[in-house]
Length: 214
Ligand SMILES: [Zn+2]
Image 1 (cartoon, helix red, strand yellow):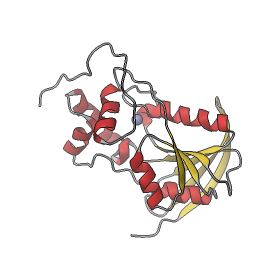
Image 2: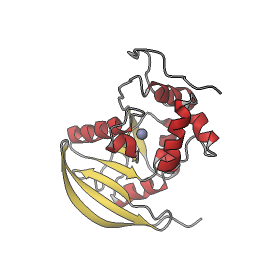
Image 3: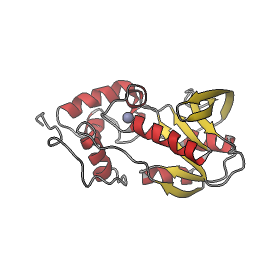
């Protein structure tokens, strides 16, 4: 496998409802995708930088879909970084846990037939989670970040980043709102993918939908 080489192409100022960020766009030699980082404040050479490593989710991030908690997590991260005064959202272009938008939408249809998110991915010939964090490690190195406090509920993400040489000094939990549409998704994350979620008391109008037959 080739060594990952990322190249910083452009930096632009992006004022947002959470404050002013700088968006950095990278190209690379491996997957040809335009990965991004959204940076606030001075992070070069800093320790314990508040970081979210976020994988693209068109339906959640852009449309505000309630099938997952991605959009909410992205804004929670931007808000937390603004409150801290500095930090980074690394935005990786790996839609649908790496399976792409087409198969993610197909997986949604399987979920509407009663399969959970892991079963649906497996039925489509994918692994439960195909995300790769190589580019995230490269981007954090490019920004000169020395160590990070990672906004995540996913212990696997911490391990992967550490394997790639990122020093993670602390895990900062991300809060998500449980609703009838994302309950099954969050429950599967907690039960089958070892996410550290507190789903003790969801206020649900009814049981999670299971209207298909296996
Ligand atoms: Zn999502």
